[in-house]
Image (tube, rainbow, N blue to C red; front, side, top):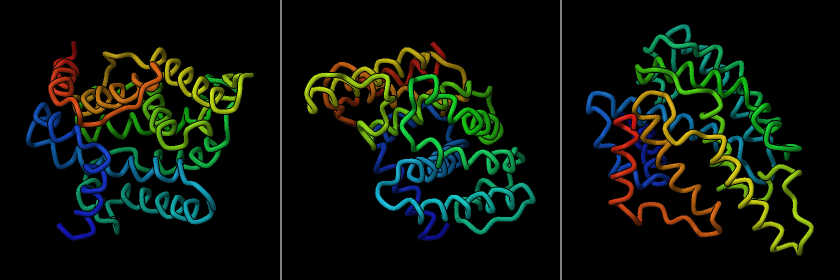
Length: 239
């Protein structure tokens, strides 16, 4: 593989240090493809959660739409495509859902509006993922909940629906709103959801990060390896 390929994988591993512990529950034959798929999803997260001028990210989104349609025709230019493009998956449908990411940057009115804004994207990700990771597909709602949780982690108050705004002072209002949104996401996101094993394991890590936010604490990724190991094992086993 190339240096560019390695940089995408390392960027994802840096953001998710817990995976070093949790990946033991993913079959060795699936680990590379899992990392590549999650690294691709991270690229979409970064486009959704861009700060400042969105034009470069929007241009990148257009490039990705073209690239994914090429994958449907068994052609690729991106280093991640060397691994993913041979998989027969609905890449064109995922390409067609990417524009939802730009609209989802706007603050939604309420929780249901937040989920609705990414409905097509969540469904397309779930369908492609079932082919890439060779398992039962996750529910689109669970996929969207994880995307929204990552958005909350990166965008803070800008990710919180307007309906959850508080009337208290600015700092307290921001914290209360983020706690309320984290709690609402956890309620909408089954702890023992469906999906391929790697998705279930990754979702367990994401929920483990979100739970402290709902409780008003700061997440500490990678600081509790035994808890990570326990939750990942339960997720892998489908408990």
